[in-house]
Structures are given as structure tokens and as C-alpha cells.
Length: 422
View 1 (cartoon, rainbow, N blue to C red):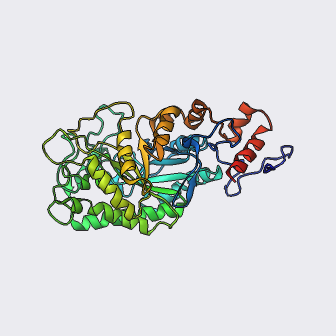
View 2: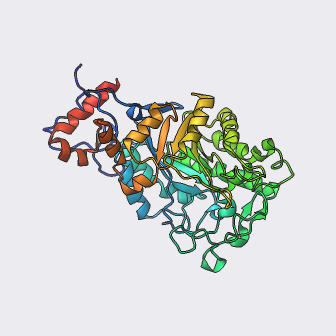
View 3: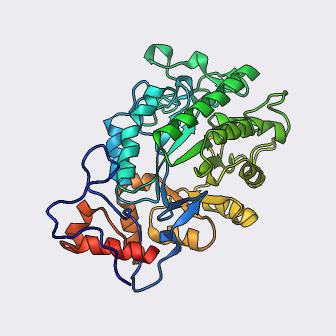
């Protein structure tokens, strides 16, 4: 097969990315793509996956990670450095952090948001950077619910209430029921039906802005005790109207949000949903949300246009008893995968920090993709690390790769990778 030739290595100039509003070298093959002509088969972790018509070049996705570095909901240069330094190194998909759909829906005053067109415009440089490097970027939408107006996690009293005089909004925190998460968090007001309708529209408007900015994927944050999560749980939702009581009524708000968001998304744009698969309250006599509920819920949301379920756990009730173990969330993704097969794409998350474990999860049929968070904080080149651990040769950004493979070799490697994909 004749190798594709992107440009002559002897040319006096490197071509720029065609859609970038500034000069940046074009990356005709995304960093993180496996080179085809290798001495052994490419493991599943580095095989592409297509979700609703969008192809991701590997199955290592970067989880949303709060940076507590925004002001009035706007991202800062920190976000450009944090996200930019990771996305150019080749994850299959990179998420920016949980992004609030309203000012009152932020978890902390330092969280970012997308509740206005001005906020949306602030993400365009990040999206343009990702796309200039042939990479995919996603946004996670959140409303903090009863865990809003709290302190950042590195302070001496993490999750403690931020008072109004310090920039908080403790008197405006809302939830499905007037039940506090913990003694140290705000006392929420029970949402009226009009409040519920307003928040549904806020999610819809935020999603519309995300589409217009150019994000490739939207994820709804339905985990960790935030608003979507607290509606589905009987421990935090004690309503007796159309949005509480029975299992079907407790999930109603979530389905309304999913339907509203899906309605403003293009048909070929994936929608993800992050969920706490269990509340870790199995030892209590009262009802709680368990993995069996998640398996049932996954089937329902797939029929409402959710393409991937991202399985975390806990965070909805301060009485939780987390049983920490190596890869302790993986059994949850495995349970959903076993129940539904390819009906919905499944993501595993939690403690995944090496290629062997990631490949074992994907190759063993326990999930379709892995979400890696904290390890990318430690090592933005985690994709490269995972590849080396598995003996896989992957494309790196030109700016990094030439120093490791030799001058002039990067162009041919991209040709090999592209021809292998054809």
C-alpha cells in the first residue's frame, strides 16, 4: 500500500491547522491514535469506538475534574493550561469540568458555568484548540442542588457552607425536598413544580449553547448527590407529588431533563449520563438507590436518547459506607454491560491509572471505555504511558514526537496510522 503523504518533509514551512484562528501546526492524525503496522495486534483500549456516528480514536476518556478556578462562572487561563495540556496529548475524549447551568446551580463560587451567551463564548478558545489538534472535547452539565454554595475541597472544612457575605447563596439552595445533605451544608428549599420547569429549561438552554460553541459531546451529571442524583434517590427525594414517591415518579425529572437536552442536540452528537450506581447504603433498613436500580435506569435512559452511561458511585448521602478497593467501581459498569450488552455504551471510572487495568476492563467486556480523572492530573501524558505499558506505538503531537522518534519520522508515522485505518 502506498503511504499517504501529508506534506514534503523538506518543505520550508509546516502547514497550519486549517480551522484554527491562529497558527498552530496541523495534526492530520490525532495524537493517541495507534500506528497500524505494529508487531502485535492492537489491544481493544487503543481501537477506535464510534458512538452515534462520532468516532473516538481510542477508549481512554478524561473525566470532568473541578478546578475551582473560575470567577462569576467564567473559565480562566488555568483552564486553558489544564485542559489544553491534556487534550493535545491524545485522549479519545477530554471533558472540561462540571459546568453549571445557572449561577445558583454552581457547587462552589469558584465553579464555571454556561448560563449565558457570554459564558459560552469563553469556551470557544478551548474548543478551537482541541479541534485544531484533531481531538474531541466534551462538556458536563450540572446543577448542584442541595450541595450548592459550599466550599472548595482543599479548604479546612470542605463542603462547608459558604455564607452570603463570602459570595455564597445558602438561602437560595434548592432540592427535591427540604432535606440537608449534612449538618455542615445549606438547608435547601423544596422545589416547586415551577422551579422544576425552570431548571429543565436551564439545562436545555445550556445544552443549546454547548452545541453552538462546538463541543463534541454533552454529559449530564446525575451522580454524587447533585440535583439530578438527589431526585432519583428515596433518601433525598421525599416528595409525594408527580416528582416523588414511586420509582417511576422519582426518575421523571431526570427524563424531562434528558428529553429537553436531547431535543436541542444534533442527531449525530452523543449524549452521556454520569450516575452514582449505588449510594453505599445497602446496610441500612430504609430504601436507597442500588445497582439494581441503575441497571433498570440505564435501559430507560437509552430509550430517551442517552448513548453512554458513565458509572461512578456514592456522594448522595453523608451516611454512606464506601468499600474502597482496587477498581471498586468496575463491578458496576460490568453489571450494566452484562445486562444490556451493546444497547448502551458503558463507561468505567475510578482508580484507573495504568494500561494493564484499563485494557483488562475493556478487553474483559466490563466496559466499552474508561474514564480517567486524577491520574491525568498527575500525568497529562497518561495515554502515552498506557500505550507504552501495553507495547502499543501511538502517534504523539509533532511538537513532542519528533524528539523521541527522530527528525522527519513523524510524517511517515501519521501516514502509516492513517493508511492502517483505511
